[in-house]
Length: 102
Image (cartoon, rainbow, N blue to C red; front, side, top):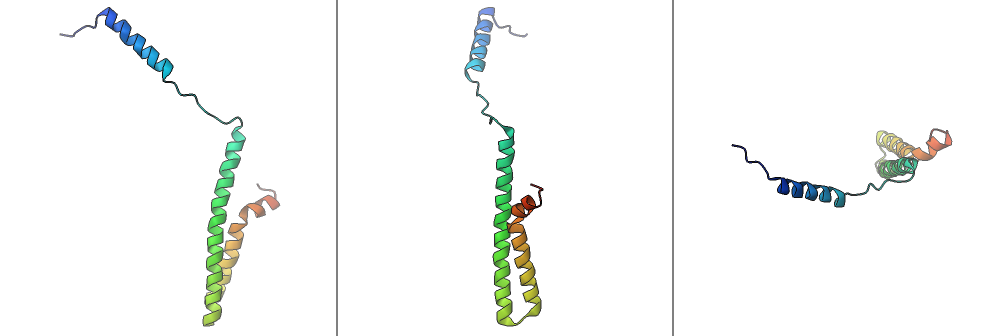
């Protein structure tokens, strides 16, 4: 047997539900211009890429220094490749903006 809710109690339930839905709303805080959000995200990503490039650049400098000390030609070439690759990664945004991509 299904127990039916009396009409007075039903009215109170729906009134409380409407009151909760009205008072518990959260406004959506969006930026005025969506392009600024994309630009901020792009700047953040390029700063992360620049940090990785600087780390690779530092490792390349260490490799070149160790190769000069040990007179190892293959390590020296790897060090210079790492050094140039780090420079390329570190200045990727500036290079892309110079050629007109970004």
